Length: 317
Image (cartoon, rainbow, N blue to C red):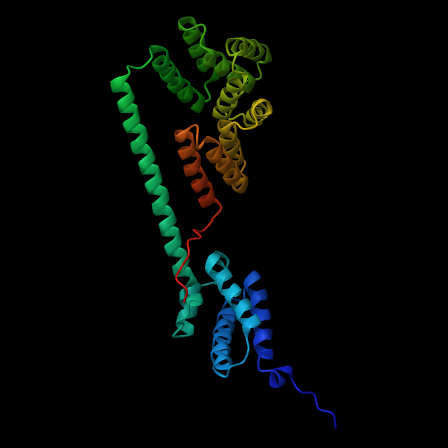
């Protein structure tokens, strides 16, 4: 009589390979299967202990097992999120001693996120100290330009009026400012952005023509400032168009890529925002340290918004 012999009986590693294959599938899609996966990982660990003590050659299986453990360590968020009611703590209580690291992925994730937040906060604080200290030093050694001071005050006034969507008073503020400094191009760029926001095409075109005339030697800067001001009046599509013009003239503009990151954030595309802020950081690294630092901070914030954990290495269990 023919007998069917199970592969796991003939080959001591047969069951181990089957369990590894199942664990690899569950790691990819753990929803509703977290408890089963954790118990399976315990079983695989015990099988390795027994079979390796018997000098069974498990080099291929060991490679798969190590890869599976690295995947668990580097990306615990999916498994933690799928743990269900009570989370990983409830699973640990049901299956003591739950001593292996995969039973504590929630704690590992929490530690990484704390480190990530602490580093981000430290970066922001250091940046603030740097900016404040630099501002004080510059003001002490070099008295500020009166036009620059005037523009800072005007920008603050415009930001307040824009926040209230008080376009009439914002344009009146610009008319007053232009009477004081008629050759200040940013005033006309502001006027162009606000006029477009309220669909005053005639006024916007005139202001844009004047601004471009005043900035004829630096057209890239004109388009960058216009993109920034269009963002400040919440004209995202207009800002996008301005940046397209700027980057056509200068594809390596760090400020342009930084603003692309802001636009991606406005649209909720945080992965694209991370990419643009990273490009801005790399482009500005050797030319504009302040912009590079700002891009680094904004990239960290965008990563936080998409729930990206800190991939710092953890001790091997």
